[in-house]
Image (cartoon, rainbow, N blue to C red; front, top):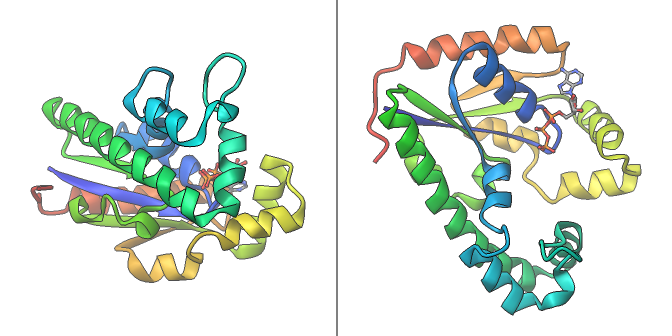
Length: 206
Ligand code: ATP
């Protein structure tokens, strides 16, 4: 049993690659963004802590967190970002470890964790045997991000700057997946990394 961390830059193709691992190769995959949304649903302990820290002005009419508003608050305020992270990161880690255990009980050899900030937050690094970085060229990343999120060039660049650069991430990982070509080419690249993972000696993740 072992864990694989999958990361990359914003809009570099992590979800595209995770989809191939999950749907074409039947791999067990966990998406940190989905877990991050799950742990702050109304009633969850992290939701209550965020509400008491940031006040009701960060809620939508239906009581759910206004993620855009919260995102813009912490984007401009490092102290508040730290406070939010201190609430959310442990909750994400706990939920993630629980879901990992469920996959191992089902008999999967490895579980892939799609974690956008794997190298920045370092939360899950101690548990990971291999890491994968999905990369494309910076101008492709910018274009794909602007198109998908309907952002101006300035806003897209600001979001890209908030993370480690793709080249730094590539220098830290075990495997890279080239997503500079068509999605079909990326699929071929994913198959190659998948073969290497399947041939890996088994590691205990703790
Ligand atoms: P985020 O960091 O925001 O979670 P991501 O790294 O998961 O993004 P994707 O959502 O997979 O990135 O891809 C970003 C956008 O680029 C999507 O609209 C996707 O369809 C497109 N895209 C991904 N790979 C390719 C490719 N090889 N060719 C063309 N478009 C692509």
